[in-house]
Length: 414
Ligand SMILES: [Zn+2]
Image (cartoon, rainbow, N blue to C red):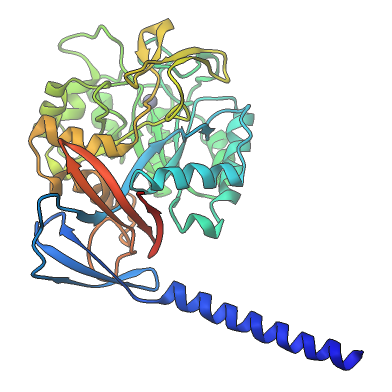
């Protein structure tokens, strides 16, 4: 009896060891992925091994009529939620599985890195959600897709229009000690904070964030030019969704746009979902800032991929998702974030500015990676993470065919 037990034990252990070795072999096996290099336009074979790109070589394979491009995956710095999962709300059942679901749904759209974004809410909800997220991102199944978080609010301008759809009762003045409670709950993973610099204490708050290496973004603000200049001198690096988070009626001279556009030290993020900005606005912003200082973002919410209709937000606001995919906040006639992932923005920016695919991918992948100091991704180069996407372009629509994250094929179109 005992002998048999030992015998079966040895067999089971041997089988398990074989299984582990096979799995390790599968994970570490070299793979070669072919496509048209998004930057050079030449056919290439990209060899990946152990989660990294190890070689890229040009081949003689003709591109064909419907070229499949290969590029680094997209990096979205403003994701409030996706496919029914909200990172920002208090009444949602945010948990590890929810983060996994949102992440794997984003992979289908070529987003291989993103910053879950928490917007203005009660301190209890913000602290709770940050601690849930901080634990959830250690999940190996996410394959390193979430390097950190973005806090947008509550330190923004409470005026109607500038505040956007952020609930007024939770908007407050910048408070470093309070922020540190959120930062600790987030396990130090808050990578970006969007603030209004003109609020009392705003400039000192910006200095404190910059000293900690947190990227400071200006947004939902109505700061005079001198304050914007001071904020940039103190380390503010980027405008959050320039052209949005502003009142419908603004002064033609004294408004927050000119100062942010005219300072060459400062980048902008823009939402290119075809609803948030007019084509001529995107063209002007792009011409002024250029490809190196522009980032495409989505501001996508949990309402993405839901049926058109009216929805009640967790803070009681009524919002409307139109059948065209526009997400509105009718009470203030402003938009309530977006329902389109960054993928749509990549095609749309090419359509309205005439920029190349290489430039669009730079704005949706390389630039954000550099902004947050993540030099392990964002470029198609040996040594980088194998976060790769294969896609076709059909009338400025990016159709994702395959997504690899850290060398693992996580999505393949049927
Ligand atoms: Zn916003």
